[in-house]
Image 1: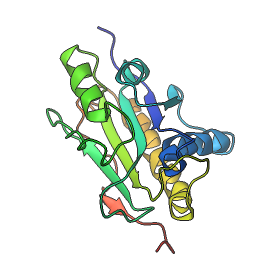
Image 2: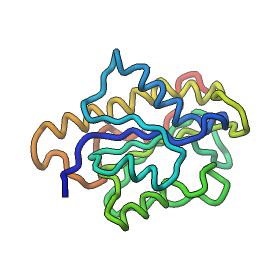
Image 3: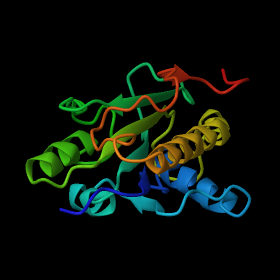
Image 4: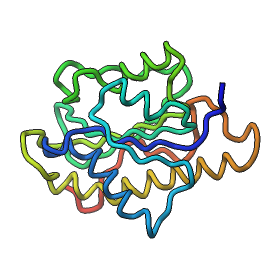
Length: 194
């Protein structure tokens, strides 16, 4: 089996469902910044609708996978961002039907399926930004759009730090999903957000 290498940053969503386009908007911002802030070699920036087969094909063989998506919890605070590092053996819990995801099968099901067939992501970090509006239409709401610049900085830092650890030599970049890459604030809100 080939050793895991590189990183995949996957934006999940639908750009025609307002804040559900957050994942795609994040990838667009990272691509636009690439000239001034190049990411390490082997970093793939990908768009996905959340289909488990497509997710698996993007992260397969990558040492680090970062997934970015909008979420819509019952008491959402638009723009509030969550970051999880999925530990070895830890399972993501599927969202209750229709409550937090606009996708049929979600990330949790994709990870579980991939793990069972030996095609799971290497280390996994999930970013979820709370949205306000998932109705038909284009464009993010102001609070969600305000979260994008800091979110892009966090993602760039995660990818660069992971690449630097990989260059440190064998044993410094284990293939397990647990990671202590950055101090994990868990949740944050952009400055000036309501």
